[in-house]
Image (cartoon, rainbow, N blue to C red; front, side, top):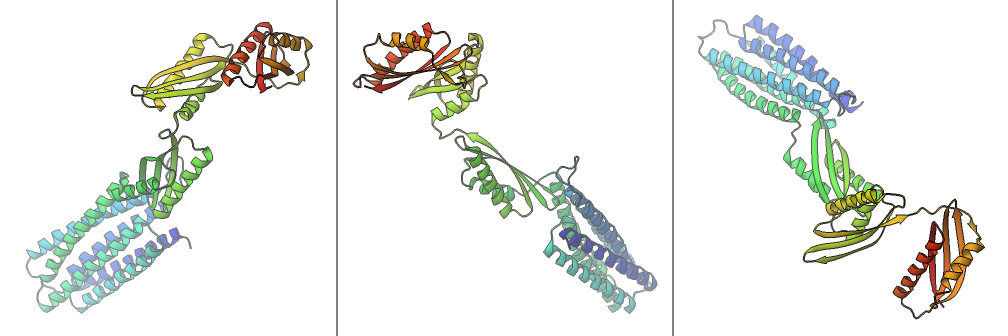
Length: 452
């Protein structure tokens, strides 16, 4: 049997017991002229209404989520409990009013006897049976409706006990004893019902215990890999608890790592909070991440950027001075390229603190087509003639040309004097590349230097 069926069956049995207790008390109360039994039978009628409301609420609460109730229908059970609490408060006020009224009335002419005691004892045992049945159901499943009826059964047992004591005291000659006891019971019922109303009213407004929020916050912050717990939002729907958590993770984390950390956060919450359903949102944080890594990720995400390289920065007392090279489409206008540059600067300043100045060097980007290398003697000759003019180049190696439409990709192997510094070699290569591009239109030149 499912847990929800256990809950509903327990409420059904409770409803049947209440109906039988009402029938016994109202018949015997009228026959024996016992106002205590008649009053308690009216109480049983109200019990019947409360339990019926809780039963309907528990049934509706089992409906699955739909387009209008994305969190399910658990709040219907809370609504039933709220209404039940109001009815219990009305019952308590009725007890208080009746008790005060009867204390001012003269001694009744007809007093109840042993038959009334028998009816009260039957009702008392009925209340005990309800407590046992509902208590066993609560051990197996949770639910506001079930718990409300469980507490209600205790109240019923108390009110029946008051009626029984009142009848016994009347038989012993102290006819006002049951009125005093009923007054005390009415006060207790009023306090309990107000607590019940407040609890369910808070739940209907999505209030949860502060301790639960603190617990979830501590669980999230204690999960390995979580840099910061940004927010924790919790709401209850019936017996289910929905938690939405937003966390910050290192910007260097891969998507796989981020997913693993989020799964651990979800698992840790569900292991500590019963019936919890958790949603985790994660976002990157760049604190404690190297500046060049942050800049590369932020700048690369800007639309129009084809590549980032040569990122360098200096930190002084006046702030961070940053420079980087950005590749953009070679056919892009200067105006559009400058807009890309401005957006890069805006995004970097958002992600890196204490930036004093940013220098962005824009370079044309030409996509390298995938094509079959072709031997082009004309180009090789042109290249050789240019390179031969540099005495620092000891040997010209292989020249490979890739061609697609009007674009030429020229790869050259050259041997240099091994004693030259890499900076000197770079300057010579840059000069050679510049001269080749002047002679060969749309050329993309790459020179690989080797020591002679």
